[in-house]
View (tube, helix red, strand yellow):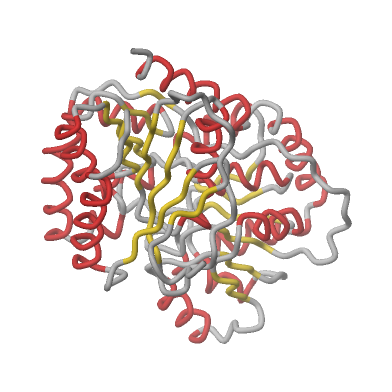
Length: 381
């Protein structure tokens, strides 16, 4: 199969003859989108005919078989305004000729084609909001870009009465801004058996998008004062600056970039880590109200983490302490807190034990029930 073109890669389960068809749309490379793999798998296992549509990139690897259909759309550009324009144009015409009962926009960057397709086909439409898109730092701090996305949001979101997001504060913001009542379906990892292993190295892990607003400006210099290595797994719009920070601080031997890796490889690395980091600055409401995927990925790997003291993380941590929460993300304080977690074996053991308990409370096996109930109600008729 030629992976350089837009192809459908399918590994489908047996479905009822008249299974409802759901199309989910993203701008990500599907291989690395663990959240959407979980969501689409749960819907497929519940009897829905699911197709996940994402992007084909120059360095995309072949898609792994999944219990739902996967479609990649390629564009002649891969970033910036031209990418979003080209991708939405191609997405609209791809969807126009497909039969479906429901169309789902995942975040704001595919909402316009989903809206127009739903009107043309007279089908249900759903907004799956992983974050407050316009309040991300890379958008909120750039007035012309913010104005464009905000116009799209004001036009489209009120027209999506059905939707869900990852926590109650974000749901509350959507209600306050647009009067929509979105449900809360958290993005939590599956409970998997943890292998018994001895950690051979006490390394610190950052996994996820290497984007603006993740405190790399202070975390990377802090590693000069930390008795460990930092492994960074991911890619994003701050990668070039992050590499420059490593070079500037002469940390090439202490800060290691792994780039994008598959979910299975990432789970292995996460389980081997000693500490995880979930850090955001406060230059954007989306960061302040975030509930990052990595927060639960660290928890499920049984590793304590250094995390910002923002409302949703604090609420979970107050119920069962699994992290050291910080208000101060300065270089000096991050180094101090990381060294304490590295050397305070009593604290580390307590947090790890709580992580293992919390796995039984916070997991996708429980959360996915709300997802399936949502679509069962929506598509009952």
